[in-house]
Each structure stands twice: as C-alpha cells, then as structure tokens.
Length: 394
Ligand code: HEM
Image 1 (spheres, rainbow, N blue to C red):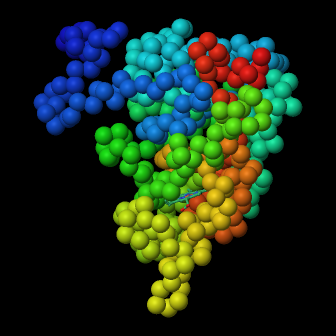
Image 2 (cartoon, helix red, strand yellow; image 1 turned 90 degrees about the vertical axis):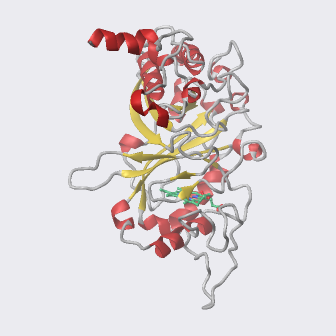
Image 3 (spheres, rainbow, N blue to C red; image 1 turned 60 degrees about the vertical axis):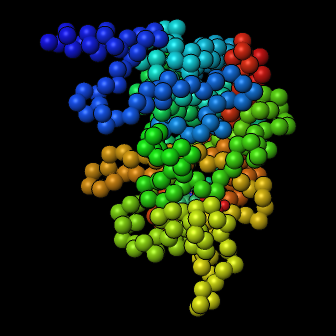
C-alpha cells in the first residue's frame, strides 16, 4: 500500500520535469478546492537593471537571512561567493534546481520566488571598497524606544527570500546557506508571512497581527521610483536601493485591553476597512485639520499616521513588511510583530527623520518595541552574464 501511494504521489500524475507535480484532485473534498497550481508555477525574472523583490508585489512568505563573513574572506572570495549565488538564484527563480541541489524536486515550484541580496557595511570593508560606501550604509542612530537585541541586528550581507509557497522559500534558503558556508555563517534568520494568494483579492492591503490594514499609504513602484531607486553616486548602487530591516515586537496582550475606538485613535484609521477617521474608504485622503464638536482633532496629534508623515514629500519610503508569529517565551502568551522592511534611495534623508519623529511621539509606541535593526545596500540587478555586486567587486 505504501508503494502504491508513493507511486501515485511521485509517479502517476505527479512527476518531475515539466510534467504535473500535483494532481489537484485532492480526493473527496477536491470539489471545494479551486485549482491554484498556477500560483506555484509563476516566476519573477531574475535578470534586470533592478533586483527583484523590491517592486515585486509582496509574496506570501519571506525569510530574511543575515550573514557574518568568516575571517579572512577577501574580495576574491566575495567574487567567488557572488558568482555561485548568482547562478543558484538565476536557476531557482525560474524553477530549476541549483547546480549542486540535493533536493532538486523542491526547486520545481518557483511560486514567484525572488532573492534580493543586500550588502552591510562589513561587506564593503572586506571587499576593500569602503570609499564606495554611501554614508547611510551604517547602523541607524539609537532611538529612545529601541530595545535592540544582537541576535536580530546588523549583518554583513542579507538575503531576502520571498515566494508564494513556504516550501519553496525553505528550499532556496537551504541551498543559499549551504553554498555560502565557505564564506559566511548565518547571523540571524527572520521569517514572516502575509495572506495567502487567492485567500484575499489581488492587490488587497495586508493585515498585520494587530488587525490593522497595513500598507495603505505607501510609495508606488513606477510613479515613485525616484524615491525608491538610487540614480546617482557610485555606479554599483545606481539602480539599487537602501534597505532597512527592523524587527518590531507587538504587545498583543496589552493591545487586547483597548476597545475598538481607542485602537482606531492610535492609528487614526478604522479597523474594518482602513479608512481614515475623517473618511469612508481606505484610500480617502485623511483630513488632519478636522476637529470634532468638542474642538478635538479627529485624527489625534499622537496618531501613528499623523506622526508618520512629514511636510517634506521626500521623507517617504516603500514599506514591504511581513508578520511574524513565533513561539512565546516561557510564561508569555504571544511573540508576534512585524519584520518591518523599507526600501528607499537614501536612508538618512528619507527613513531616519520619520523614525526619529515616531520615536519622539507615536501612540503606537505603547504597544510596539523595536528589537532588531539592520541596514543594507541592495546593489543594482544583474544583466545576463553578470554576477551580483559585480560593479562593486570587479
Ligand atoms: C502607516 C502600522 C511601524 C511608518 C501605518 C498604518 C498602520 C501602521 C496600520 C496605516 C495604514 C497605512 O497607511 O499603511 C504599523 C505597525 C507598526 C508600524 C503595527 C509596528 C509594529 C512603523 C514604523 C514606521 C512606520 C517603524 C517608520 C519608521 C509608517 C508610514 C505610514 C504608516 C510612513 C503611512 C503614513 C501616511 O502617510 O498616512 N502603519 N506601523 N510605521 N506607517 Fe506604520
């Protein structure tokens, strides 16, 4: 019976190399399941002037792996590493096994896999290229709200691995981590998720674990490219971007003590459809001047959305965050939050002023705590035949 089942799963309808991997009939309850096999087969181009995974509509799952370089890794070694990874990523993102793939079956469902690689300050130092380091490629200033932990902070290199299938993400992370072992060791790993494709309408704003629609007012790839992508300075960064990864814990247990109106005042938006407290629909423009019959601001002075915007239209960034929901510490009930990720051309000019404003005053700070922080420079994308970071390393 085991063999027969195995054959049905692997042989019959489900096989490798372009044939069907899954039958999708799902047995008796198959009638209730729409065929979503196309989600597994969808791909995002690896090659291009810009790395994928930034402007790409966020996939359902992400793993962020930051690496520490091993002692003695120099520019030549970094070139070898980046050549190997470029080949691996190019193959995996089109649904092909990596050259040395030990589980090639796991590579066959790309599920919009993207791998976005960013370099930390230590990478440039090891490459002997410190003179090409933008001033924002450094740890963020300390903010009074921060309770940073080493195990979620810093790193010489990051790989942001995203796909609409978690098995795909795990496999890509495994391949890349193995291939990196002569050069680096994982420093921290952060895993996150959003809604599953098909479970919510396409393009819907995600919900975070506080229940809010999160990402309503965000930069738009295309019209806002000027603020997302770097267009001047050293050649290796032109077409690249700056990346901030902050791990922000949510205290869901004290958040539970708030009633709905209070929760909505914290953000300045409604929980049900994300509309500003002065509007009806999610994308209505908030009216920050509006006052109620008692003369109080409808969107409070301490509300997150009021504090998170600046009069300077350049102080904006692309938020591409993921929820995390990890096992609670002993004695605790929950361990949830956001892997809060932003992309911007200039971290110092665009991100830091807003984070500083929020650290000074933001009602949300009573329920959230930054516990990790890292900054990376995402080099421009690879043209066919190039390797990641080539203009920096060659
Ligand atoms: C807006 C939640 C941390 C910057 C929002 C909104 C929510 C939200 C619900 C309103 C919907 C939207 O426009 O996306 C959270 C949560 C956080 C967090 C739960 C932490 C766990 C941060 C941090 C920053 C930030 C650390 C920046 C340093 C922004 C910005 C907006 C925003 C710029 C848009 C404001 C506007 O222009 O209306 N956030 N946020 N958020 N948040 Fe956060």
